[in-house]
Image 1 (cartoon, rainbow, N blue to C red):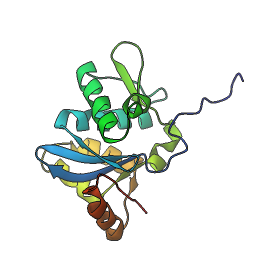
Image 2: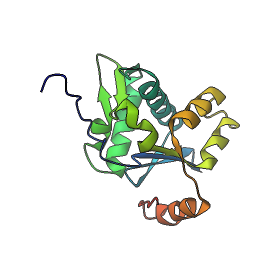
Image 3: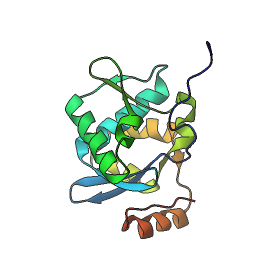
Image 4: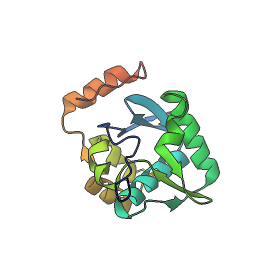
Length: 161
């Protein structure tokens, strides 16, 4: 139907992405659809940049390295299920990518644990990126929720309440 807004694949999900701030062997833990995903520094920065671009621009596409984007998709596929990475990270024209969330749902679908912002002092993310993420994401409110994440992360399954 002309004029009707296209529905994004992940609009029906709450808590699509959770930035935990946990670190393991030079990788950073992020939960995607409730599954633990360990990202390299480049992949984490790419994901953060894509989320900020999606929330702050009308179209949401951002020029990124195709190699890093491919690795990010593959890592998500391996942790969640095949095809999830490509569904979550759309390709535009050439080397443009965006997160497959409607702009108005980013604040509902993406959460940050308090420990994630420790990454600023480690120079993993900038203070500007942290400020943007605080503005566009939902904070993980209770220590109880974080404890549930820690318990279940060992089984690569995360429950967020």
